[in-house]
Length: 529
Image 1: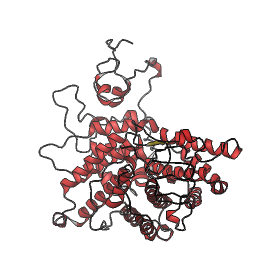
Image 2: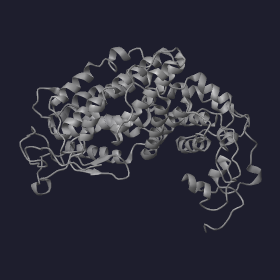
Image 3: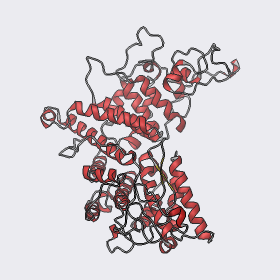
Image 4: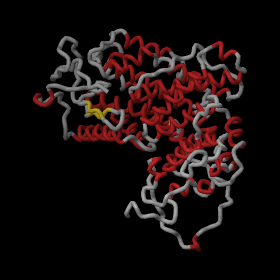
């Protein structure tokens, strides 16, 4: 259709959001928000139905609960009008999202999916935000249907429409920081890592304004408010350090000197689980981050003693251990146990990138086959809980499981002895990871290639002789975990790597960087981010 032709009706996105539409294909509002501008065919008059009086159905996806409650938090207090600009989107979401019953129906999802892992906003505060919204009943588009996963982006757009700028007479609030953090989580789940970074940095900036690290400023606050701000700060610290690992960005926030003070507003089991995840992420300190970033720099070297020492620190940490997680829910246990395995693999990847590992090492943490020791524990853990207990953690748990599964596959491919024992573990982990919502396409392609390679090897149609063609394999580049043929994906902060085909024997540290032959791999030149 010609872009200049006008229609007499609003496009579907504008109609759902109750905003003015100019009736053109690719209207101004959709272009502004980067939404697909579509026009549904008009239904016969007899097919129009009266407004549904049924209560809102619950959202089945944790990201939907986060996005919807973020919308609720954004809308609360945003009762201003748009001003003289008729095309402005500001504050128009107040009227259309004020159906209190709809958001009240989300509170149970919020309690299950969000509160245990984002305990800054309490249940009473979430309910209060809903109860104080405008009384205008115009949430029809959301009450009449059961939202599916594809609606998460719509919820995020609604939240952004409702989120007001910080005006001259306003102060930064805990709820505003939490809203930005919720948006960060949603954009991560949608695979928009760049926009997720924007809202993460926004949260960090607002936390600095709140001066939570300033003990004198915190002491004048009421006890419950001080505890809440501490929980909020630690939540952002955890997400920032995970993002630093996953997307190679520096972390700005320093840990607080104390853990959050329990104030009774958060259930005790949620508080215990939250403290444990904090204790685990404290091991991803500035020193470990610098060494992780050094995996992309062949000029920086790592002390050989650091690897076993870091492994010992993580092993000695009782948080995430079977004894301490026993009193927690399955969802909390899965998060803690997988996170601890993931951290071990991170240390292993750092050592692998600097060629500090050996197939003949008596120290398990310094062995090339270290991931094999994790595979059975990881498989047993996943088999012992429901899929929903893992899905609830969203893209974060998927990234951790990918790193674990990929490391296990690399070792299984290059070790015939281990392959016979652990190929079933890899197949199980791969199938489970692939069944999770919205798997990353680049990561899926990588695991598929390794799965196919293993299938060929098992059928005897391909061998694993290291570097058989010396012309093509005389030099290799490694990715951050030491795998061969690293190729940087420009669209995502993810490494696309070919299956490992060498590194079977003990590493030599006497050769020139970047050289690989049929006996060894030594320190390679690394591509820069």
